[in-house]
Structures are given as structure tokens and as C-alpha cells.
Image (cartoon, rainbow, N blue to C red; front, side, top):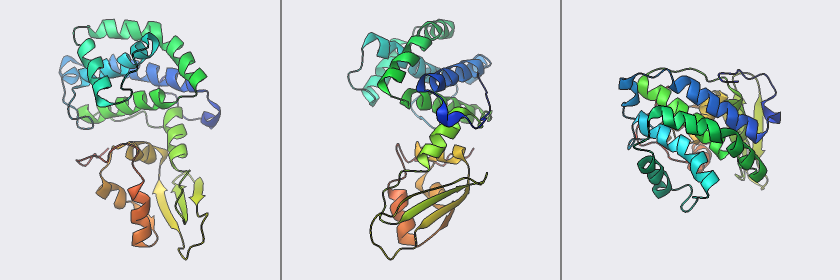
Amino acid sequence: MSNSSRDGSSASLAISELYIEAYESFVEFARTLSDDEWSTAMQCTPEWTVREVLSHVAGIPDDGLAGRLDGFPGEPWTAAQIERNRDCSIVELFDRWDVQASEFAAAIEAMGEPRPAFDCHTHEHDIRHAIGRPGNRDTNIVDTAGTGFADGFTTPFAVTIEFEDGRSFSSGGEADTDSLGVTLRGVTPFDLFRSRLGRRTRDQVRGLDWVGADEDIDLVIDDWFVFGPSEIPIDE
């Protein structure tokens, strides 16, 4: 299922299926990396190398199944993953992850917790950005996360997100207001997936094709970032 294209069924995919897709996609891509690429410094996660990203994403199921959840999902928790896996070889991490992936996918399915799938796929694209090998953007995970992030705004005025493919999502606007609302035009699920998870600066998001009063647009952007924003421009 790795590198699978969106086929219109992403909304119905189970969390476990999304995680397995993210895992398989990450590993298939990561197995192609050279030694130099593994040692590349990251821009999206500036404290890490590509190799340390693997320690993190492979460390999540290991920690989850072992019950090591103190501090989840904060920086000390992720730092401990990197330190714990520092002496493991890349092959050892792949092999351990392969053993644990299905059980962990079932566990997060039972919990109703999709974030590990989104996190894993986010870091694949972080690596792709770091080493200059973009691709694999039309996936079920990108579409599920991107469309989810296009909805659910709670502003007093309506917020409409218009995708390039013709889909449109509107939310907010429950309060009486004189505002005509805000519309963001011409974006993709990938744009939402990356920007709302902190892979864009505030100025980059503000530079998108917004329609509406400046103060209303700024209010939307105030609540835009689930993580971040990035301190440096991320161009993909």
C-alpha cells in the first residue's frame, strides 16, 4: 500500500490502515537513502538528523507497546527515543518496527488515536524536504489529514477552504457578526497537512490566496497551527 494514490475512499479508512500505509511508505522510501542522506540535518526538526527521525518514528510503537508514555508527546519523550535508539543499526530499527507495526496499529485503532499515522507521514515529508527528494503527496493520509484540517474552525464568522480539485469546506460562523467571512482559495490537502502541522511560517500562510478582511484573516491564522509555526520558511 505504500505510495498509494488517493482513490476517494480515504475518509472511510480505519486508523490502523492509515498507520500501516504511513509505516510502509516511510520504510520503503527510507530504504533508498544513502549514508550521506541519513546524516543530513533536518530543517523541519532542526535539532535532528534524518537518522534521528527514524529513531523517533520507530520509537513511537516501541514506547507505546511497552507503556513508556510519561511525557507523551513532549520533547523529553521524543528525546528519550532518540537516545534509546542511538546504538541500534538502521536495519535493527526497521526489523523491530516491522514486528511491532501491526500490533501498534490495532492499539491506536482501539484508542481512536490517528496522530501516530499523521506524525509518521509528516516526518517522511520532512526527510524528503531535507534531502531534496519531494514526492508521494497524493496519499490517503495526506487527504484525510488535509480535509480534516480544512474543517472545524470555530471563528464567529465562516471560514471556507477551497481546494484546487473543486472540493470546498466551510465551518465557523455560528455567532451574529457583520463579517462576510474568510475564504482560502486554490490550496491542496498537502498544503493544509504541512502548514497546520507547523511546516510553514506564519508569513507563508498569510501569503496564500486569502479573501476577507485583514483582521479576520489574521484571527484565522492565530489558530492555524497545531504545531509551530516554523521559524524558517519551508519551501516544498
